[in-house]
Length: 476
Figure 1 (spheres, rainbow, N blue to C red):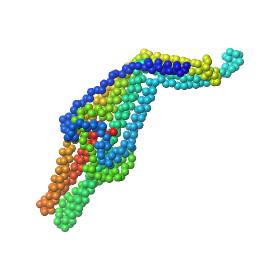
Figure 2: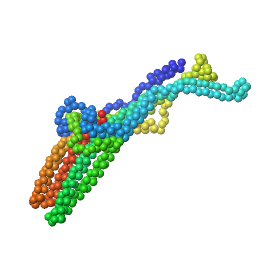
Figure 3: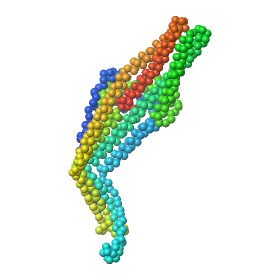
């Protein structure tokens, strides 16, 4: 009897759960142009130089295919395993998953078992026999506890909201991983660039110190003026100040990498190497429309949050309608434990449906619905802003891609010209044709050009890293 009663009650409750009052969801149109700006398009064509036919989207290209340097791959692997921000993002997913499962459980009746024992002593006047007596009562049963029949979809919409929040958290984790991969790559490039600048400054300081020592000896012999000595000293001290600066920056770069990786770094991975040895894939899909942004993890995260708020409107609307809750149980009652489950007149049951109709709530339900609509509008604005930000980021990186190659070539040519000018000026100075000031100026120009080449090279590589990130790649 108990089993049949509970099954019937469960089926009736399930059949009564029906409609949803959430607004129909349609993906909002992207508030950006369908194609990139003209300058960005040129950058994209220059980046690939080939048709996009047969090329996978950037989001489908694994980060190992983009970052091919073994040391950089090892650093990224370590960060993905130990970075605390990424670990927090993963734990947030677990929390969201459990929240969704808790909310989902409300769609299914909760069945619980219970048992009780009651013993009481009756006085002579209340026992009915004229004698004091002690009675026992045993009850055992199973039943539903305040199960809400979801006629208007309130519980179901709350579950949909929790599910979309969970999916948004998962996309947030992907976005965090994308950012982490790019941050590690950029931090490593910065470390290598500063290491190169440090080596360049060390070499420059040695050369200037040797030149200063030679000029000072010449001054002591009366062959050079005191002005020549002072000017040479300015170059030495300038290089020494730069040396201290780059030593500081290299150590800070190490600290930044250690924080990103979340653990100590193998010293072999931090042995300085030239930026030219870093291999980053330069071919990404050409001719991609701006709709590729909709696959970015942060954009998908914003859309799931919009869906969650859309579902919450349905729950707020359903609150205006009657709520039906069911409480029922079936079991056995007996005055003795031994005969509790025996067949006979021991069976008991109860069925308590309850209807709650909101009549006067002081405007609470209406305000709650208006709040739900406002939160949906906020989520919509955030989604559109996320799409617009993504469009701007991709456009900026594509424009930069179109100019960095030309800038790096020009900077390298500037270094070659500065080296030739410095060599010629030195020869003219040694033959008394040019002044020492002209030589100092040529040396300063050469050092500045060499620094500029290293910085532009780093920025060019960082542009490839950022372009891959903003196109939605990096997390697979």
